[in-house]
Image (cartoon, rainbow, N blue to C red):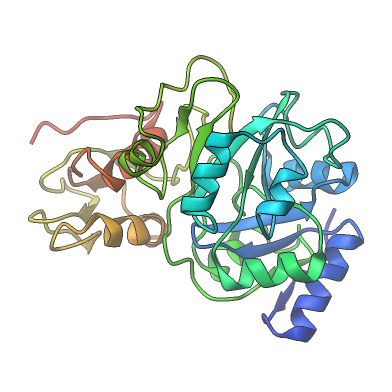
Length: 318
């Protein structure tokens, strides 16, 4: 299916047009504070199916549903006291909660990937919030990129990957955080299902207990072993580039591009996908990536890098 992809501004005319496309079963890419999402009416089976088709995404991989406020989330899932505590502390923001799907919730079965739970969050980007307000209903939205490839943090990234397959891109600026949301499962013991833009240590302090591990199987978005990948091969934990490689630096390790010259993990998270997109567009045989510390946002950055390098993985020896 080929369509003309419109690029819309986040003004009243553009937002009205974007909401019209969503109500008509169309797909609209829009920015959140994490990455650009590919949005569809979460209650529309055909629209949600088109999300999977446009991305080439496996049908068993569930989607995150975005809502404008806490009340919107509580209408979709079986709420809990811990969910209330986390939502009060971190919403709007880069935290997704996975809870049992409420009976009669107006959510397409395709969204949950056959699970009895739903992943839901309240985004903190003004463009996303304006669109949710204008549309007035939940929006199912994975990242707006071909499945398994680099997540988009700019409207241009979306256009390069999905133009002709979606109705519109709401160009409301770049994503400020640049790293997908942290996903916490609350169906039983609180579990870290995916590290992301909210460090797990901060969440653990809020609930007063450590988060359990994810467990086996796919129980949240973003858990495939190979994911977030550039076309170029990645070489991780490198301290210098080899012939034909481009170098992605961090801290004291210089590069053709650098995530953060002073070792700032917040800056590194914001730059990660943008710099990988740029280096991947070069003629490099591979991308060498400097070591990133396994703490705070560094855990999420390394999670994305390991998944990006999966099945083509090479640890550096220099």
